[in-house]
Length: 286
Ligand code: NAP
Image (cartoon, rainbow, N blue to C red; front, top):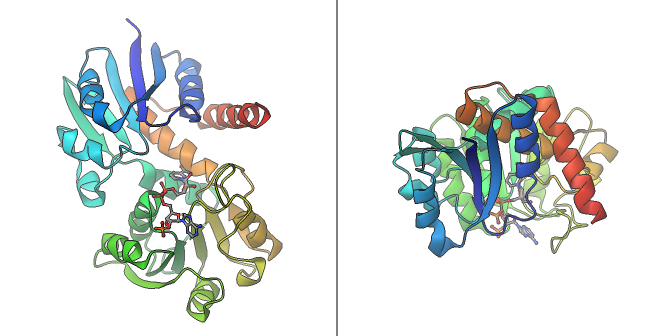
C-alpha cells in the first residue's frame, strides 16, 4: 500500500513542499505520496488522529499549527519542548513523535555557504516563529552574542530566553536609523532577516530592514524569506560586498531532515533544490 506524508497548515495551496518532497520520494523509489492538507485550527485534533493510521509516515506542520501540535503530539522531543513549536511529526506504532527540523535547516544552510559564526556576534532581525529557530541555531553554532531587533520589543524579549546560558543576547530597536542597531550590525559576522519584509506578494515586498550602507565586505547576510530568491535585503547586502545566503536553502534542508526521519533514507538534496526552484518559477508565471 502506498504510504502518505501530510503537510498540515492553513492555507497550504501556495506551499512548494509537496513538489520537492515528492520529487525526493520518487527519486529514491519510495512508495509514498506527500499531500497538502488544508486544516483549519478547529480541525487540527482530527487531522492529528488521521496521522495515526497505518499507512501514515508522518507530517510537516506549518502556519498556524506549529505551536498547537506540540500539546497534541504523544512524544514531543526536548527541542520541541524548549521551543514550543514543531514542524515535523513522525508516526511510529500509532504514536506521534514531534520534532523541529528548522534549526538543522538553518545550520546546514550556513554550513553549505561556508558561514562560521563560532565565537562571533550575530544580529537577528525579527522575533516571530522562524526567529525562534534562529536563536537555538545560533546557540548550537557557538555564536557568543546575539543582538535581536524586532518591531515589537516584547516578542524579542520572549525569544531571547531560548539562548540559555551559553548565548548572550541583547535587544535593540528595529530601526535602520538607530545607532544601537547599526553599531551591532557593524560588529556582526552574520545578519539574519527573519521578518517578513521583502516577501513577494506580502504587504512590504520591496522593503528591506537594512540598507546597503549598513553592511560591509566580509560579513554574511542570511534572509529566511525565499520568494523571491534574491530579496531586497540580500540585494542590499551584496551591494556592500557582503555574502548573501537565501532562504530556499533553509526550506530545502529542513525538508531533507524531515525526509530522513520519515524514511530512514538519505534524500537527494540537489533533486529537492531543482524541484523547489521549478515550483517557484511556475508559481511566478501562474
Ligand atoms: P511571523 O511569526 O509572522 O513573524 C513575522 C516577523 O516579521 C515578526 O518579527 C514581525 O514583527 C516582523 N514584521 C512583519 N511585518 C513587519 C513590518 N512591516 N516591519 C517590521 N517588522 C515586520 O512569521 P515567521 O513564521 O517567523 O516568518 C517570517 C519570515 O520567514 C516569512 O517571510 C517566512 O516566509 C520566512 N520563513 C522562511 C522559512 C524557510 O524555510 N526559509 C521558514 C519559516 C519562515 P512583529 O513581531 O513586530 O509583528
